[in-house]
Length: 48
Image (cartoon, rainbow, N blue to C red; front, side, top):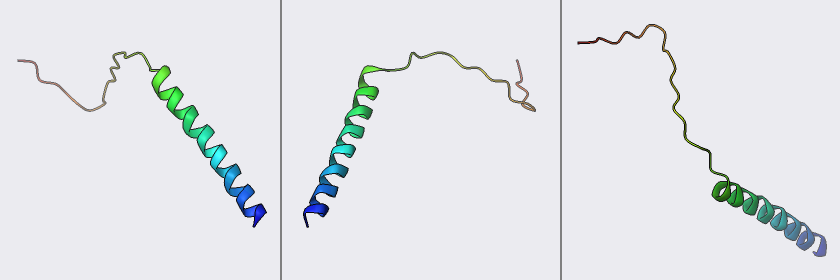
């Protein structure tokens, strides 16, 4: 039983570190917006 408890605590700590890291990355480092244009082959736009 102690080895199961130790395993669960270890998995919990690793999960908490991963969750905290993802939270910090999502709140502190936001990408800067930029315009992206891409030509689609075979698509013609009618200009009136």
